[in-house]
Amino acid sequence: MFDRSQQLFEASQRVIPGGVNSPVRAFRAVGGTPVFFREGQGAWLVDEDGNRYVDYVGSWGPMILGHAHPEVLAEVAAAAARGLSFGAPTRLELEMAELLTRALPSVEQVRLVSSGTEAVMSALRLARGFTGRSLIVKFEGCYHGHSDFLLVKAGSGALTFGNPTSAGVPAELTSRTLVLDYNDPQQVEDAFARYGREIAAVVLEPVAGNMNFVRPSQAFVETLRRLCTRDGAVLIFDEVMTGFRVGPAGAQGVFGVSPDLTTLGKVIGGGMPVGAFGGRHDIMACLAPVGPVYQAGTLSGNPVAVTAGLATLRRVLAPGFFDALSATTAALVAGLAKEAGKAGVPFSATSLGGMFGLFFRAAPPASFSEVMACDKEAFNRFFHAMLRRGVYLAPSAYEAGFVSAAHGAAELEATFAAAREAFAEARAA
Ligand SMILES: *Cc1c(COP(=O)(O)O)cnc(C)c1O
Image 1: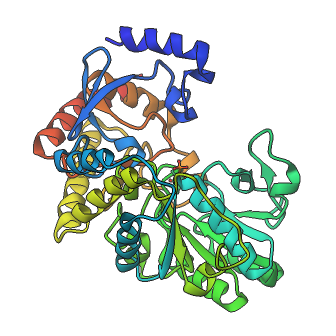
Image 2: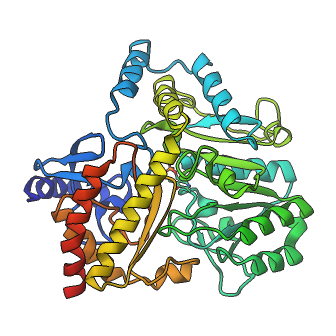
Image 3: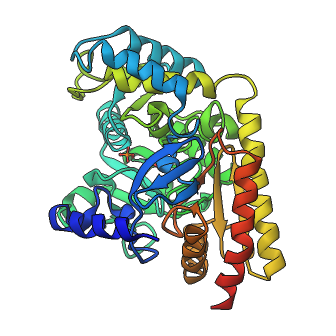
């Protein structure tokens, strides 16, 4: 069934480290051979062997309208025909900035970059430049891209500084990062009591999607807002995943808490490389060429990429879009939980907007340690059983899932039929 993918993977491993250009694609977490895709249409992917799959990865979030949306493609083709890049300002960048600042009231000014990693890296530098402080607070299980300062795990004690999670990151660079537990307001209180006026920024995923899917408690996000305001730290919501994914105003709209800076990516490029960071005018005014914090990019605001993003966002912001997407996603997780129940498998599932989490655990987790307590082996068996039946889930128990506007009743029915057998298989082993 996967012959061609197997051949391509073997050849790729000779010339690309691990055969992939981003580690999670290698299927190391679930085992087996990564599937090589040839094309996507709507909610469906086709691999190099000709197998068809209902796609719940959506390129890790961006493909919220489904693959190869004809009207988006037409706009992108027209933009490409006018030239691929100018390295000079375009009307499209203004349109994108106006759209983002309208959709996200906390974002008064915004700068475009080419990836989520760049967006968060730049927002951190800006927060440090603005405050003149160096300390950063992040939360275990949140991912913010692969920049040096953020590849960090908790130190040995509650309020000790972090250690690098990657070789090649000098310990000096992570020694100013405190790593706390997600959804633990008391730890944040303690950290601010001790270090408050040294903290440049608190950065978090306002719904965590890189340790599977974990909602913040209202108390957690409100505590962060209150303490950052009190002590003059910059609150950064990393909405690279949640922006225009959980709702039309991101997680900040859902929870009613305004960050000082917001980072964006994924959906705002509609499958092309676009990232952004923005927020309070007084903070953004510290950026070059206006202020002293340097940041730049040859391809930043690329006209073809921005066109894909604008074409996607206009449709995502149309009235009723999120009602429909949320209903589809809720129906998906309810149907999967029902099938698991019938098979007698300990399982739970939850969603927000077009994002969801599946857990081999009786209730959805609220913390990193609860995520880690899920039955990973059961997930891995389920993943492969679904894959063989034409359903493509994220190849790791620690990733969120995504639904697009192209997913409908037929896709959900196909998914439930596969799940009926897959849960039985997951249980049998
Ligand atoms: C994907 C992601 C990033 C990194 O974005 P890239 O475009 O992969 O560099 C950063 N933060 C969050 C929350 C993400 O989900």
